[in-house]
Amino acid sequence: MTGTSSPKDHPEDQKDEPEPAQATRHRNLDRRAFLGLAGGTAVLGALGVALGQRGFDALFGGAAAADGAMGSSTGSRLVLVTLYGGNDGLNTVIPYRDSAYAAARGSLAVDPTGVLPLSDGFGLHPGMPGFRKLWDAKELAIVHGVGFADPNYSHFESMDIWQSGVPDSPESTGWLGRWLDGTRSSPLRAIALGPTVPTALSGERVQAAAIPVGPLVLPGSTLEQALYAAVARGDAGGAALLAEAASSDSVLLELHQSLGPILDSSDSSNPLHITGESTAVAGAAGNLAIANGGGGQASDNVLAAQLSVVANLILAGATADVYSVELGGFDTHADQEPVQGALLGQLDSAVTAFVDALRGTRHGSKTVVLVYTEFGRRLAANASAGTDHGWANVAFAAGPAVKGGFYGEPPSLTKLSEGNAVYTTDFRSLYATMLGGVLGTDPKPFLRGSFPQLALV
Image (cartoon, rainbow, N blue to C red):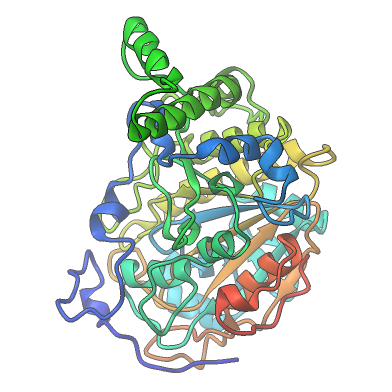
């Protein structure tokens, strides 16, 4: 299915564009949130939700899971990797045998002698040898031409569409948030790494839990923590509001005791084992999703740190079905080659180590990693050795449960619309595949329509 509608914003206004006063969509992912998602001290309050006893029990398969409060789990897990800034898919999955690619990119075209060949005239960026190994093991699916009709050049509008799963009307909930609502799930059925819950995991009644990247630490001194625990014990004869607050506090204390040791182990027990690259979370906690619209890049270990925490949770038996992690810095208007190369190297090493750590394990063998970004880049390079905002792009799914190969039709590089590759695969087909094939649910009510599932799981 192909769309050729004109964009909403002019490409010359791409760099750090202002929000139009007449904007029609609900801005769940506003500029402040987009550029300023940064972790602070890893305090217990970073969980961001009043979990309740059922939510606490659900985290490790207690009473809530047993009585159905979390919905029907398939035992599969989805790890959502969001690349903020608009990764250049043409220099990631490279059509190196297409003469139109080299002609338009000029010196920014990846040298074909360095490309990691796949098939059908495509190859991976030289900095992605781990993804090449996953491809050879038939554990990497590459989806061509992913996008939506009536595209635009705005980071915020495009990411809002991707996370809501609704491209044609304002929407305040996310595609996975509606799944949480519809399955009457505990917040802990979906976990976001970092201080905030992304729109994708936000429902009308249920939001995912946000947990810090790093140890869970109760706020205050030892004495203050003891007083906090005393308040949490409550008083059976006290006021109803105080009793409710005490109940919530006691659950957070229990969560600290049960989840805390797993998060503490992320510094000392690193299941990713990335040679030559530290995945310690201490330096990464303050660098989440520096998503760029002119902003900086995340530290070298930020994605590996997040995935190390996720791996520890999965291997420890946490029953969450969905995890969300992120990497920013992909808005490469200038000097793209070194910036993108470094970021793709981080993505490659972190994701492949994560898949390797879970392969063959009791809790991790059915985990699927989905990697996406808000839009692609234009075919032609710009005058600053970079690329400007475009339309269609590639997406990845990785893991032992994935049926590797190419999916979707590659967009033509000679039949462009305003210099952009036109989408051939509706992004909601990706979501339908994840909901149906991984989470084991009917996608239609959560995507508000029927979309063909891809045979990649």
